[in-house]
Length: 494
Image (cartoon, rainbow, N blue to C red; front, side, top):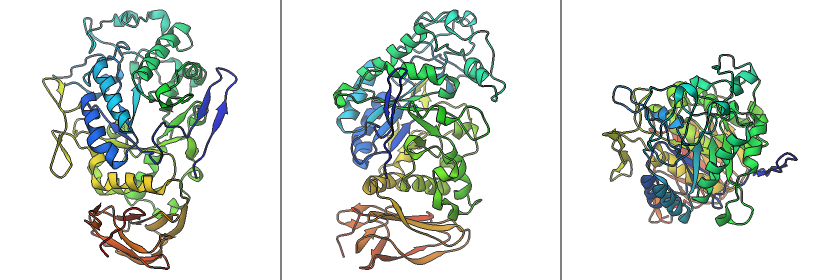
């Protein structure tokens, strides 16, 4: 059941309704098109994302960043070193960004911008420039293109060494990135102007980078000054989800930020990696969600991996495809949180930037089977992922029911009267069982092994009898460890 949380704050009078992602009805899945160019995002909205039911795209930071060259390569993290709030990056400029938002909004796919407002750049050599040509006096904390001067940063300058020290986490420099003082009116005004400009250009939401490193009181004041999204109806607020890295044991907790907007729930990927690698029994997923100590569902941004954790943490990624597809399928099948799917490029070096030629980002090529080339992984185009987006859209707010497990690593559950999913996580053991599904009688397409096309199924079929029973067989050596069926994907050929 969807949760609607309404919070009214006396300071700033901020109204937050966590159900309002600004997506079209019956859509809830975000895809992070990491480092894509704006023109390529626009094309992907039209040709694939909208038809497959994705609701929104998280784009890389649109603000001007410092150009960093390491042995001739441009690392991914340069996008998180801000030179100014001008909209000029390797992904494109303001004109391309506006074209992207117009085209994506037109087909019902929202654009959420990843915004970096905690800090500016790290140290850089004199004469270094940004993607828009801006310069800075790095030693003296002077960024004339904003403008910011030394007094606009937290002093004394220090680096974070102790994450048990709240003041240090919020006032010192994250990996030596120059830490802005958001309590200052001049800093707030520059940030609000930047975010409102993005809203004016058609952006409908924000992923707020490094939120944990900013005081919630300062963020509350900034959010209170954001404009409404007028082209979506009177009173619609931008959707805000905040990066708050938390695995437990730290004094800064996600619940300090949930009154302001949603939070990124890192423990989703951290817990599910152990389950789908086979280290923990699947049966424990029966009470997945808040009972695992996770943030409330109505305030959680759920994900398996992201651009950071792929490179810095032990999480499932595209490199463990079988387990990864199953973990994403579980996340999309279960009602917990607002889900985000990662879409990557291939990398072996953890600093590697996007596929490029002469420092220009390459566009993904699309193969005849719909997968990507030119160095791009495009997990969002994997059949096992985009079909589960359709599954999630089909179930809506239907509750979890008809849970079954074998006492170990085989599970199944329904989304009442709408869908059913089965997982075989047992090593070397087949799943071969008849289960009650809650679904109406019919022949359903397994949306993992194939699609519902021209009235038939390109993959396996599952027959549900008049008692709502069906037989499921997932061999131990199957390409995928799961089967999923849902209303709307029935075969008409029987």
